[in-house]
Length: 114
Ligand SMILES: [Cu+2]
Image 1: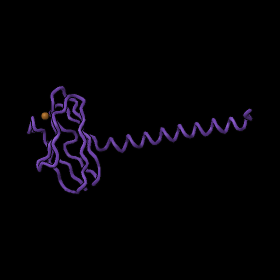
Image 2: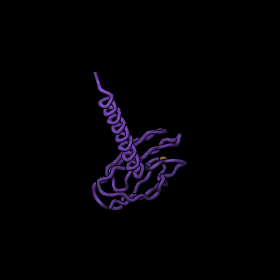
Image 3: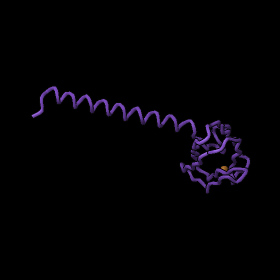
């Protein structure tokens, strides 16, 4: 049989574990948010983004129209993204990367990797 003290110790550990798991989720979500580019109303938002080398950028298309994510220099090129589709690319090298939509070439953004 468990003593009352032992049972309380288990309850406290479980509470701490839940709290720690919740904190970890929160920080992971925050770190990701900063590198998310939303495609909405035929625009990349933000239109310029500065990130650290090694970071991954996630683009998400919120428009009902398909869009793509392509680099001027041909480093990456997504397929057509339908509504709510995402595309990811990891930027390993510092530099300035021009991004556009291959379907609507006037849609542009600049990503600076430090
Ligand atoms: Cu487009």
